[in-house]
Image 1 (cartoon, one colour):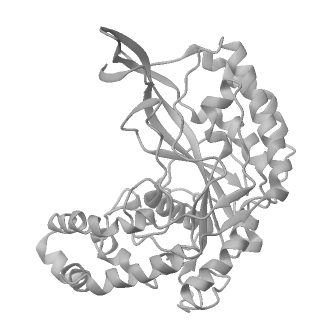
Image 2 (image 1 turned 60 degrees about the vertical axis):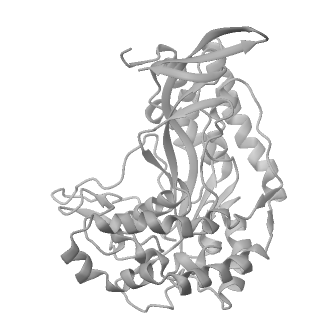
Image 3 (image 1 turned 135 degrees about the vertical axis):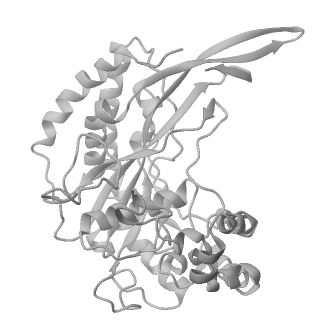
Length: 426
């Protein structure tokens, strides 16, 4: 079956037109939860990229009778996360949610490391003027409940946010053999030249794993939740705006527009670099066992050897990059690289869709939408080659407080589960 865009998506554009008009008067000084939802809604026509991919077949049985049922296989992007980078908690760009969360977590990070965390996210550890240090976090976008909202469903706003645990970090030792296999793909001469320290850690990981266990015990003893009761009323205002759009879309399409539920949990704190301080600040250099951290051209935000905004590895808050917007972009890619994989050497909650109601297939990556300081109504991928351009990416979009927030739109391919999955066409 050939791909084609679903015609009822014209209803999405019509429904968001009114919301888009409000963006002209929206202040760019900070982003709030209603603003996150409004800007997300305005980007739907550009970023959703809704397509019908084929048909899924399922086997259903009742007593002694079995039959085949089908459901449409669809693909589109979901606004999973709001990823923010900033210098200090009080300058967090997401004022009504990100700021109180970052402020509360700062004390936890200080307790884990046993010392006060500086406001530049590690600048006191390395005085180099060439290096940028930033904190970062990733919070589930309430608009990720797109499937529920577009069909008139509701969203429950929590009064507390649980702190990410050590579930994925505990799996990291199982990942060491896979990392070792990655080194076999690097030319031996290069590996021997650039990564002797990494090889030592791989050959004798005992001390490294002991350090990780100590950190896990410290974090496991925190068991903290973040109170956000003060923000609930304002959050509800933003949800009402988005649900209004959802009801319009549902009415204009006869409720026939299906969506893949995203992998994030709305308002959920999936990542906070202060909680992840031992790894994000490079105090425990686990990231240095990856070949991407040593070999230029592997895992770059760009086209590899020819041009790059910066490397994804090592996934820490340190980056050599002169442009502040590009710095935020690269650090956001590092956060995304952590959150969509399992068993990473970080403290986070993996972003993964629930497969109980839908069957998921491999997606096609992700795109980004700037939310602050210059809200965009479209999506893009980071790393474009602007070396021959008169302007560079992010010019005219810098923030005096050096805080940036981005919507991460993740691509999903799914079909609604209607029994035991058999196969799909194509």
